[in-house]
Length: 562
Image (cartoon, rainbow, N blue to C red; front, side):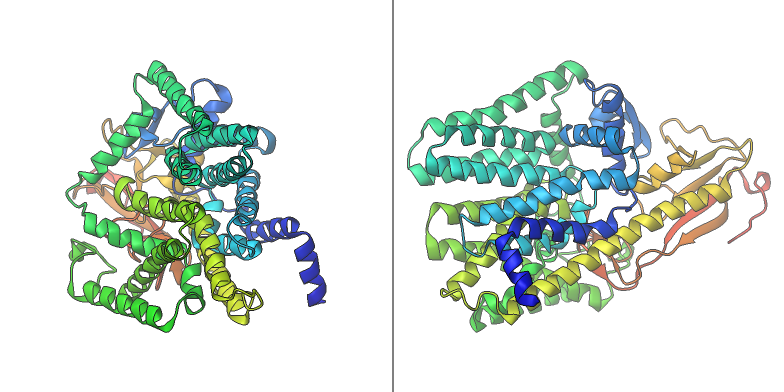
């Protein structure tokens, strides 16, 4: 039976990969919208009604009302796709997640095809990419990241094929895909210098191929002209300015950013950690062990992570620091995998992989406004290919590449990635239940229910009829109720004497693993000096929301703590 399955997989690898991807993601299709999902949905709703003006509305974000063009840091192509999907499936969670299965499938199948130009073990490369926390968690959002990666991978595939065969038709299609990637997420524009460098290494001189890189350049220029005409601002330049502004925060430290980027690289592409015994010799393994010990010492005795330990609930537990040290050492392993590949091969394809991985890491560490799992995601196809290449070099005959160790490594990475995806699912569900339960218990006839906070909490609070507080123009009246969630951003608790705590609504979420929690040190979607892990094991607090009655204590109803 097992041999029959192997033959089927070998005969129809694309079908096998597609079915496996759907099987892995299908249990999470009902995941509630969370984190920045509501921003993309809000733009898609605007596009559905006014397709030529995607950002022509205001949104309450960061506790005040801004024009949407001033809030978003991404171009709108993913939102157009979202609007199209909603026209078919509706605005429900399952329908929109089903639509975003297609980009996930495109990434997996594209990685399988791309790997054929680098190694023989294409299936291994695709599976190593699939079973990473970065890919599985990002595939369960309706944001732009996986769609951008789908365009990215297929642009690289067609560009390599076009360069090898002087097929200018494929180069033209690749240029269009680069433009689509850049219009999905600005980072997609990095394909232009990446593929230009690869082509110069291949051909050793400029050529007609350079013309096709003008397609994404012209597209970005047209987008800049259009947004300038619509909103009076060049939105690409605005995104760059926002990154500069974020780096100017007094709490920003380049050393901290690099350290956090290493931790996120090791955790988000954890498959490398599970393959370490197969990829490296004993001397290298000792080096990684030494790096982990060094990082642990820095965390215990130094101050690279966490500039304000008194405000950092995770700063004392040794187990959390152990996780940081392990994943930071694994992050070094990811970078070493790319560097050693170029030292052994010295060809244009190796340079492509090296620049792909190091470019993604550098962007996350130095140029992006924050380190997060979404900024690490683009390197996952390259890392999967590097693992397959490394194993092929170690076992040239090929008979030991799919050894027991390989199967165990993939299984362990799959188990971890699925656990992280499940934790992210449970977190989103707890946020939704917390918002809906708060609304059902706190709304009263003739009274307005207000709230602070964003992400999925804002989406489901507004869906239940609550209003977001605008701190620039607060409209609360004595007797109104307002809600402050604990695990959120831009929170401003009431001043003493201005409100009375009525109750705290608490909903259990993930128990021992989470992707977003200040108390646990996890910040997959937005790391900072106090959330240095993409995901964290340990005791995870429930999702809580404090309900206040606005007005002096004598004007408020009697407290009824829950």
